[in-house]
Length: 163
Image (cartoon, rainbow, N blue to C red; front, side, top):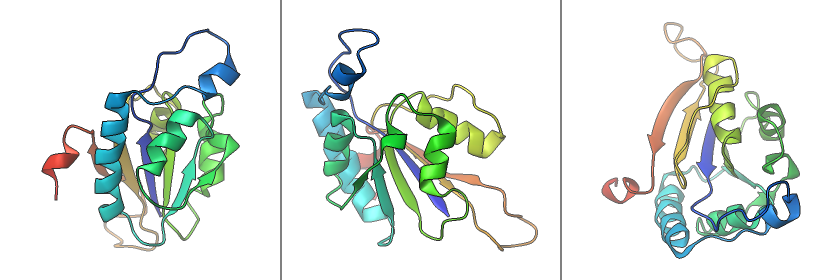
C-alpha cells in the first residue's frame, strides 16, 4: 500500500488561539494557491489511477486538493485536532489494497510519517504543500521484507523540476 501525505499549501494566518471553527475557515494565500496548483498538477501525473483521495474538512485543505483535479472525500479524522492514529485508521494503513493520498495538516502528517516509519510519533516537519510518499510492498522480496520505506519527499519549489 502507498500512503501519500500532502500538507496543505500556505494559508492565511490563524487569528485566535483555540478557535477551531475559525481555524477551519482559513483560506490559501495567493502563494499557497500557486503552490497547490503546481504540486497538484505534478501529483495528478504521478498518482495511480485507483488512488483514494482523503481530505481534511479545513478550507485550506479543500482548496489544496481541488488543485489535483480528482474526486476526493472529506474525512473528519483528518482535521487539525485529530491524531496520527485516527488518520492511519481512516486510511486503512497498512492493509488496504488501494493507495491513499491524505491532504492534511502539520504536525499530524509528520507524526503519521514517523509513526509508520519509526514506530513512534515524533515532530517530523513536512513543508507547506510538500509531499511525503511512503510505500509498503506486502509479500515482496524476502531480502527487503515488508517494512515501509520512503518513496519520495518533495516540496513545491522542486516539483517543477521533476518530470
